[in-house]
Image: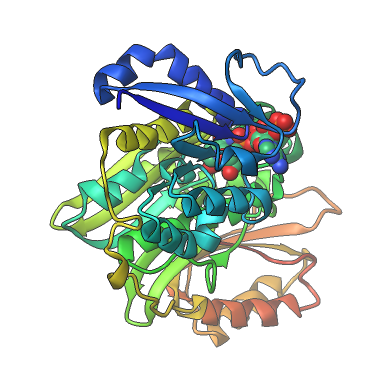
Length: 429
Ligand code: NDP
Ligand code: HSE
């Protein structure tokens, strides 16, 4: 067979990006696969909308479920989005019919990847999702193929382009959070519901997939700690910079003696480290493994072109007949393991407290920290205007989340504390 017929369900940012890439790089794709890759069918909600690409000679399906079983479709690209509903149905129907599926849908894989993987295996079909994690960065292939012989020690990553764009734009220009988010949406970076981006959920979906590939566990959102960037202020970004840190949304996963750690939250990261220098819509993934040691991958984490690049890498693998275990491990070896509790995480902390400017406040705060066995590393009270609450900014030596939470509870109850304390974890590597 010299042709691979592609059905695209969802003609939004990514779907149109794939059509554009197929047309721009048709000769390269043919030379590298030996096949003509043609779009034979598409489906979207609105047939009348001009999407800037030609749909001439391509079958249109009002119902994406029909596309999933169409006779002239060999590979189904699910580019609609959402963990359930139509996206899941399209994948189930296509896999059930023995058709290969490529998706960019991290929500779907994080929630239903194991069941869909079984369905794919039972029907001798491929299920590939390179674009689901970190946009244009080939992180799935790196973990599943490039590092297949390694023992993965840890993975830390900046996994959401929208959040990174917001944090770095706020830092560079002092612009308002909502304003920058709107711009990220216009650029096609954000999810249909952008609270998934800023709430850390989208990045957490990606971390769940990474942990699955790294440690051979089924992808799941159970017990994954998630904190978004909504509470990070320009003030925090500025104070962090003065202390020598960048603020980034970072996901971390590694095996510990209490189970596999998986957490996604804003971090202060030393500005001289690679992760501290990832700006704009870029994502980055730092993998530590034996024997390869440290690998650092960086690239655009969202947007039409970079995401289409990853989708097409999967489609081309199918065209070439590449066959790899879906989660990088033979099905019988994919086993649930316990996840560690956030209480056990040990790190340093940044704390910003809005306080009444009067005698004894500093002593009251340090006393609560001392009671919780937490040692202060740096402490400043920047100048403030009369009538405004004073700010105390401090960093701690390493302590546990459990101790820090206990200290925060008692501190928050003090009369002199005027607002909910701001806590951001500090990562060192
Ligand atoms: P968009 O919102 O731009 O596109 C979604 C598309 O799905 C639209 O064309 C929409 O149709 C179509 N659609 C919605 N409901 C249906 C339905 N019932 N039947 C058929 N089509 C439907 O999203 P993106 O392209 O940004 O994202 C698509 C997927 O890729 C998501 O899973 C997302 O998480 C993922 N992703 C996105 C990235 C990005 O940078 N944007 C990067 C990596 C992954 P219509 O246009 O007619 O309204
Ligand atoms: N909304 C996602 C992001 C798209 O901003 O990273 C890429 O997965």
